[in-house]
Length: 436
Image (tube, helix red, strand yellow):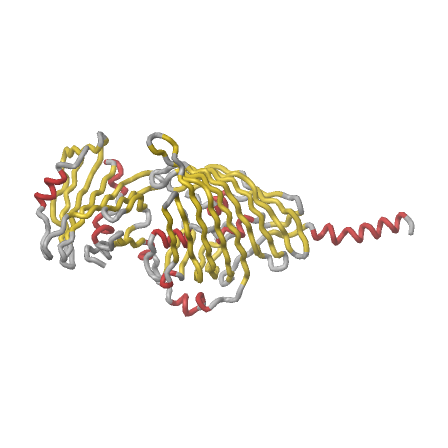
């Protein structure tokens, strides 16, 4: 064989090999596309706390398992999903912080959910009714599968090529409220037997609930070149999250292993199931809460975060773009005879003796009409708490069975306008002082 013919044969032999190294790494989602997901999460790390002025970190260990089917309702402009309908067959987590353990499981009547992008965040609701905060964490805090296609370059790439991941995709994948900066890049690693393997590496800085977070990411994924779909991903990250107005400081390592399989439309998400979806999901965005002892319950806007809860009291904070706006503290008040309530004068006398509270001007002092045999008294004042200027509104709520609840709402004077009507979410809807 001459050199010329040898060269020609070599070129022909190499041509298919070279072509196989270039692939269109892009997904095109359409309404009606359905996927089956299996996710496993493991977390280890520590919560950074101090005791007696010295560091006393608490170890953190957590695991979570999610299995769900997802139907695309609409794509978004960034290449991912803008709205999806999901049905969870499994959604469980176990965690231990120090010596405290917790197990969570999504109840059967909350397993059909809707996830939708908004201009500010991704909204998760259940068609079965308001979620608890724990239930919201189960469906809203696992890896954001809606952003998977947006992690790809969306074009033809060769083995070794890299691409910059968009800030929106980083924000969703890291569950940030906002991205400060990032250098996350993707790389096409190899293409073999119709499967493209890609990697994602970089550092992202962002905010969540008003706290800064630095996340180091190292992930790998597989892409079916014939189907044009991501089929699996292992996502590992190291988090260093600062203390925020409603969250502690933590350092953790997390690993998510997920598989993703295109599927036919499951019965849980078929036309009959979709016909049951409410036309307006606004009512479903509220969260429900029951006190530890079951003596009272209510629904509330999800911007309020529970920061402390015992059998005797409940503390919640309202954040606006990560900034503290207000705090609510609920405590049990002495019980009285059924159909009775403490007098306003007795309540005000107790308020006058609160430690470190110096009222300066009373702005409201009245009874507030309620139904269901309940009684509500309200007094508001401008003053100083621990030397800081604040506005405090105090409520005394009595139920028909004689149980009573004291509620204190505190905010800075300039934040009062940002408060929703506290009476609306604290004392209407499902609020009750009846024993459950």
